[in-house]
Length: 243
Image 1: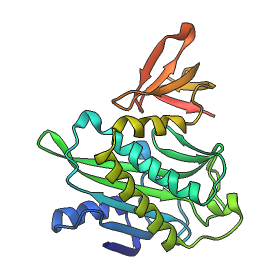
Image 2: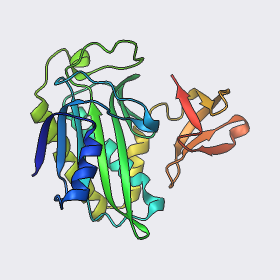
Image 3: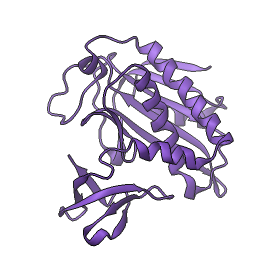
């Protein structure tokens, strides 16, 4: 296993992209940094992390041969790999908030950013960025943020935790090749935050509305049952789930 450990970089995703353009790194090459100076989350949000206290790393996946319409399966695999890792550490009330945030109760402890690279008409390469709050205990004005230390009351070995996540990533990607994608989808939806519960959402015009999360479409859109049980699908840019 090729793990590149850095003291600091702009972002591990960006570092891995540069590595990919300059050389031929092996599948599952990992870049981990104590500090990201320009770490990004979903929708370009800045990922805040104290140096040396958390896991900020990226994993290279190659030879995927995945149709672009099936891209959300990557989100499912990565989310479930992190979920399984944290479940083994007995993190309570684990859920996945669509599309791929990991929560303990209502507190976010992990964010995931996947960047896909097309080869012809297929997604052949993906750079998987993961930010996991581990030993940090203060998050300033960030709402609903927590860490493993705050939740479980102890420090964690970052290297050990990194290896566990990578092991579970490899296992779930292997299972995605041999098992039906349907079973992975069902597992993901079974642990989806606020599923089948009355919830408040905000659309891209800042309007609030009520609905029930029913699942996720094959193209990764959130399926929300509105009034009169009308089912509508929303892309990530179209809706926010309010706590």
